[in-house]
Image (cartoon, rainbow, N blue to C red):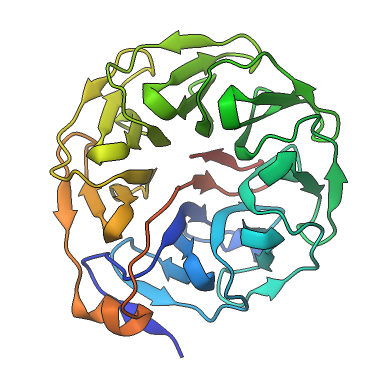
Length: 330
């Protein structure tokens, strides 16, 4: 049975990922249809929530109790990954199927590009798949934990612990680039024709090719944990309630978040921006500048239980439509 969570957005659960999709029925039927927005949230204990308007959410039956850490869309399906090597797939985001394990390392990030899924995880794990069902292990050349991956400019770029950066043109052969920071790199996106990665102690680095990087001044020493791109430009979030805004990714402004809780991720739902973090913190903004704290409500507590772990990283994707590959950030 589905349960509905109404407007206040907060959940007594760790929601690892939010992915927003401009979803066309034509992706499945081959016919023209009006577009609508589908948002999916995944998190601890296999939690999966879906919304078509960003304000009303339904819980879907999960097939795992593992923490789900990331999700993307490609090749006409959703693919979610997470703790201990869990991989789930779904055609519509409602009925999910667990796929065979290829590793038992945590899978921290997933991206879809060039007609291929690429997943990165702990101990240098990289796995690839065309269909999200049959997976292949790839050699990364590192044992460092890999925390994020993206695709852009005909290249995959993965980042991770102690400034690790890997690049690949095909997802199989990876090149370890010069470490660009001594700190962990927590997230990476490709937007506005450049890669941007963020990390601990205020690290922000930009690159047009994933190889040569330029350090940008964030003006802070907070750990930066998540990044998104939307109409307001780039937004990053981090420890102690940090929110930064930049039109270009070069010059950054601090925005008041009205919370001191760590913020782990941020996404653009197309209706608004959502930043989220520890202790169920959830912030909403329509412009990336003015942020409002959303409070817990009884409905979410009844549906998801009383525990309240951290809210994690987010991702936004425009899915494959009429042969065009998805564009992902987060």
